[in-house]
Length: 280
Image 1 (cartoon, rainbow, N blue to C red):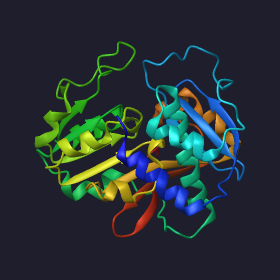
Image 2 (cartoon, rainbow, N blue to C red):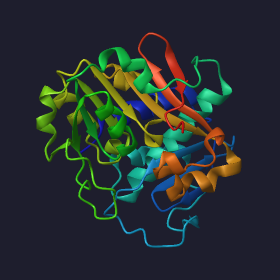
Image 3 (cartoon, helix red, strand yellow):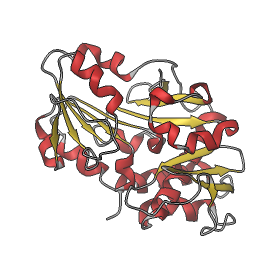
Image 4 (cartoon, rainbow, N blue to C red):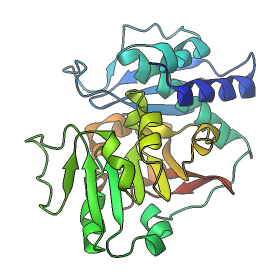
């Protein structure tokens, strides 16, 4: 199944860079993320699907993809690849998007604003918040606001994870998102090519956000499908390997927050904005 969002993002980026995109400089495969660094030092990240083999030393320099591969060839893998190819492709598209953000004035940004603060007026008692993926640090906050929390996460019962509060409702199918008021999904849905399905099934939600390092992409394909906010990450070179590490999976333990340039929030009216979703 081809992801239309990724395909449209690829075309937007190709149109921006034309025949001279930054070249691939390095490819790093971590425990939960892969990273692609371009010749202009921009870096993109992508989540690795849980079921894919990944028992190898952290920061292992991948040898299965030649770093001389053309940027657009690797980027296209996000749309048409299989398995790990999709993650490498998304990381490449994210790196190209980061390059635009860091090197042009195409988008404005705003620092240190939490998504929940933006939405606080909507998070009244009884508000139904559907969460897709691992964003467990937000669960406790939402429950304290007396919101109803519904989680779609096939790994929610993982014994290695902290158990969820009993107030949380677990669902197995995205069709059950049709009655939620707010959708918050991780960018990992892009790796599964399921983002379009999630957005469609949550069509009755008044606010929708897709967030996480994997979703550092042009905003237009998301806006066209009714998404209000997307949030990714801009990474600096110094802590590239730290970012790729397991540490990023738990914001409470993240020690190098200032090396992640916050998270990027795209808003329909104001373009690309930067918010600190990983704030302690």
